[in-house]
Length: 396
Image (cartoon, rainbow, N blue to C red; front, side, top):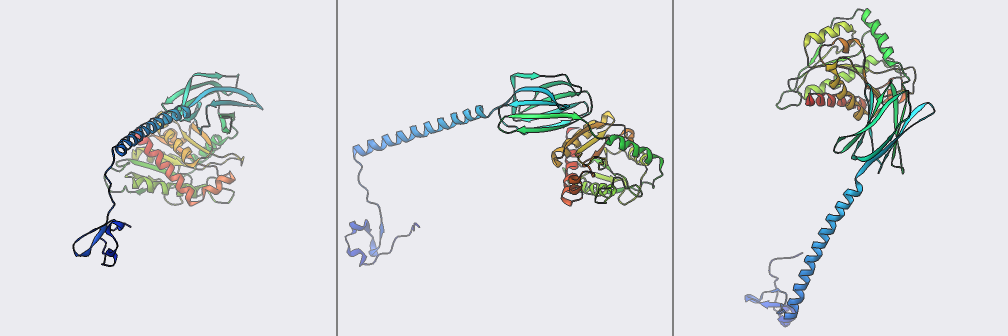
């Protein structure tokens, strides 16, 4: 370690010739170590100048090479979508989508089309699209949705299910399109018909007061959450024996906590195990004149291999809300996309404010049933709904 104070030297030390130690005498017998300086020769000065010049050139060349390398890498790493080939096999439709590198895609199933986004990809100006006759696919197109994203749009003739697979080493994405295999909308409609005919308890809404503070993201907004089912209406019964009505109430409470913490006033149509009539719920929603209404449910199907996320709406003013919620649930939960669907369900049909009905998971699916009742996944569902609500208000 370097010591900036002078080194103490005694007379014994100074008995050696000072020059041999590189020392200079000071008063009181003290000295310090110094480097012996020799006057540079003309030849030395010239060599030093040449060395400095060489160092400058080396720095310049290195910088130029680094910049050119980055540019070359940028061009080399620029991914493009080159072609789309449609085919049919084993009763399904397939799209083979070729890019210049492996891409993690995002699918979004809408009412009449399927969108597949390719982030970080440019659309080749000579992109090739080949189609085949299909009972499901009406048209295939590709656009540059934004400067960094290519979107493949598959116009549909009927309701479908789809899967996406990435073929490693082939720079290819395969989209499989088949017929929809469930009847969840029909089951929901049958339950609604029965529920409307039954008398419910009077609505006793529970309020989550907004948090105090300034510049909160949802300040001044009012949200109504309806935990589906309740009382003698248990809703779906999971294979483990737990009823849907318990799960919807847990989800509603967790979501309300997040919304109110962001400044929103939140009303739950029930905060205990009680049954509300659907007509009474809609009358309360329209009377309260909140900003949005969200009905919370969990799905069920007779086929245990079916799972995923569905979102329903009906009125045109509800679509932006439903779309933001569906997209947020898909990206947050990372379950199979079962689509944004327009359906005449009573609550979303008769609500005068933007309204959506959510089905995050299938309780009839063994894997999703296990997820649904865990606190961590409950928190994830609530967080995804909260994010969707924020995105909706930010864009509307």
